[in-house]
Image (cartoon, rainbow, N blue to C red; front, top):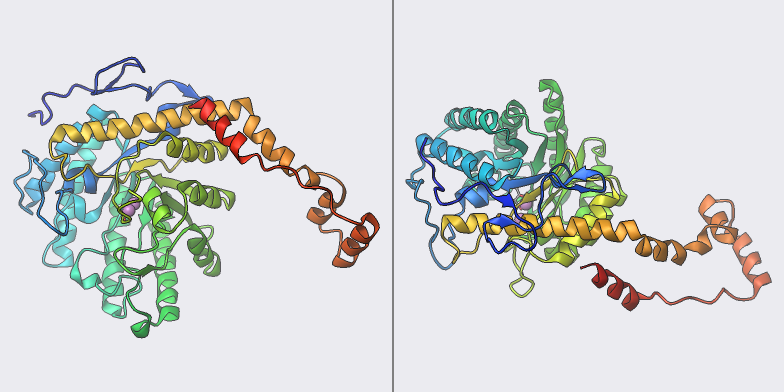
Length: 437
Ligand code: XLS
Ligand code: NI
Ligand code: NI
């Protein structure tokens, strides 16, 4: 088979001193971090939609990407060829996983039956390529937002037929994900929300979303799919308000609807910042509740403000991510999926390599830095010490639930006043983090 990236050799780890832009400086797949190889800890994944379907178009102009292998048609043959190219890219990069939407990998047909046929025809090639290369499927998902039928939403559409269509599409996408050994299945509610509350029965829409999720879980069980279901929070874009606004909103929905044992979260950096949170906040919140399942690794441009899906290169960001991820012992069966696209101006195929190498190196550095911080234990000691009033005495009694308001009043009347506060030492801690970078 012809090579589509003839000038690129498999990307190797050359160490921090290397000046080769097509080499890893920090990501060394077999190097151990907290006892686990980087490959097993980070579980990097390539996003099919951005990397193989991204055109570079924006609201002001058409695509710019040069992709010599792609004839630009919506034929099944073109999709199959593209899949082979994708696996050449993924294996040369050395990423162990990839992710897709049903409609990224195969063209939509005129009917559901035709779409399913196309999907099967491409899935056959994906399976062959997975077997040939050993690359695995981190997660599959269904695109329930591009086709105009989903203009009012999918599971939350006012049109019951659209709910039925979405159900049929997700059924198929779960089945193909299962067939390809997918380790997770993602639900991103692109149009599950509203543009205007005047025409929206929010209560009914949310009830339908819960119904949809139970039906999906029932079907997964029926076919023996054991992959983890993941919700991907995002507050807005394309809708004004999306129901899966952030980790907290998702958790409220999952708890209220008896879905806590069925669904975890896939947290994306650019979605966190759109919601007015940091990535670390979203990760910590999800992790504390036991539902941090996977991450979409990217970054937004805070000056632009929309979901720009850039590759993550900021070492502070990746260090913060890895502090939380190491704190919960990794992400498996989830991973670090680069839901990120090269800029419209970076139109050459080789830019896809530079982009992923940068993201992988940034996460490798973040992992090493976070592990060093954790090993020294200085940060953990500061936090532990900060809360020591809860380890014994009145604090321990409050936490144990053995005191009432009456007891607390008695305690304070006897004592006269609360013990003095201590400094939060934020600046010292920020300096400390910089010592590791
Ligand atoms: C869009 C989302 C999307 C999901 C998968 O903003 O990030 O790409 O990851 O549907
Ligand atoms: Ni995403
Ligand atoms: Ni996104």
